[in-house]
Image (cartoon, rainbow, N blue to C red):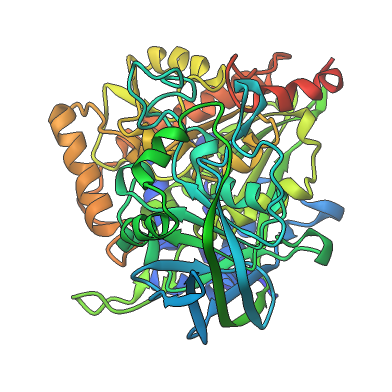
Length: 549
């Protein structure tokens, strides 16, 4: 792929680095540029990608950064598998030998991340595995050694304590309403594959999932994954969701009450339950292709501890072109999601280059395919350029509020690691306080690119403006909630996520400055952030402790 460096040279800033400070005007210019028609919505594998990657390389090079990839490259290849399911030739469940067809999109939603021409499951037994959690640090195992090879695993969404009452022993064991990684659908699919299942279905309910059935079915059978070696492919021919209505009937036909099984699954002594007399079958054609895509990596080498890395991240991709909205707009521009994060990284890089080199190295990762499942950052974490055990922290920016200065900053993933203490310390310098995310049951901590680092043990911090209502200087928390509601309810992933004259970026500048201050402090120290007791990622980091001493 040829990146358009020459064509994009007019976007570079001419002022000397040392003469500049973090600037709302420069952030606005970068956002307007990246979300313009020229970039065509920044979809991976398109002309929009070529232009986006070229723009980023041009910006980092103009600031004096070095290529951060292997062998002096600015990019890291991240080939993507793109799959789309066709019309099913067969789909349903056999009950007592009688086939009951399921309607795709109504009863069940399915996709695949295998590069097969056909997704085929023939009369596979169905096994209810409760919440599908295997958490040794919480003394919890829903599988109890049951063999799932060739079977379809049926899960409940969220964590075992999500619906628990105070009189149940599980109450608070997984964080209550705050979702852990064990509650995320991606974990459940991975766990099903680790146990050899051929399929995985998650019972949908809106409170537990954090979104309605309309969101579940919105990809229309399309899916993405990184390209994996044959021996690394998932065992799941199909993965997806079953509607609450279809699940209730499925359990009833097996002589089980779904509500009673939900309650039973909230006990540590729960054992998997075979749905007796029922098997699942599907025969669905698959169209698949490999899409060539790239991450952009840039670095500022450290002066004395160069092998220790403070890592900043944001994603360059958006949703490209899609159906026209009411105004006839087809480009889903991703101005806030995540042009503003990319603009923030460029500004942070500018600030670092205006100072003497830090002790530790600074690396900027601008990822592809975040919108397709955090795939660019996952590709990096599977083949890291810099050892993850010597990566000090990952600081990620993904969506910032654009309604002005705030008295507070929103903390995503409270109780995970000591970087939240750094956030509070530097926010206090700005005269700001910490507000926990408002809907922790939605699991936003697990839904941005920093998570690819977290699940390998690297301490992380996410700045995400839609995680809660900011206490705005102009209008208070009510105004902050209105901004969140307006953005998420109308423009999130839509063509109207575009830069507008109503944007007030002084609040975003506050947040970007916080991330810069935290990273600068880490880059000029010898300390290592740590996971807090009870975090599901602490044991992973502890295993590599010797590499940091």
